[in-house]
Length: 95
Image 1: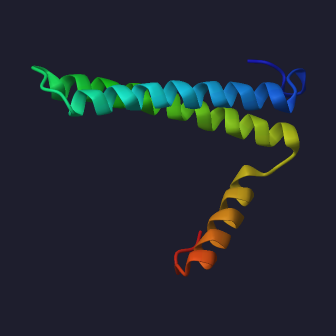
Image 2: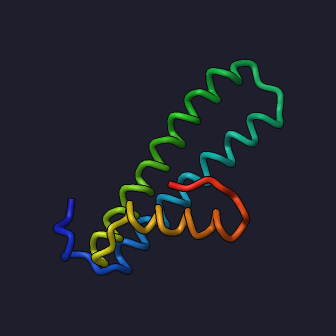
């Protein structure tokens, strides 16, 4: 809840990276749960997946704020990059 210009692009990028690290930590816990026997595995997995979704959402929010801070239209950038990669790998999928 900072004004966009109150943080530098580095600040926004570091916040995004922090959320990515938190998301990876939750994913690691899901992997650990899946590879070991556990009594309530399904319930625990559902809780962890919800937690992962929140961390991924935080990461996307910070990516959007970083893009805005840089004056980048994130939707256009994603579409352009996705389509370029599709062309590069020979896929007909386009956004």
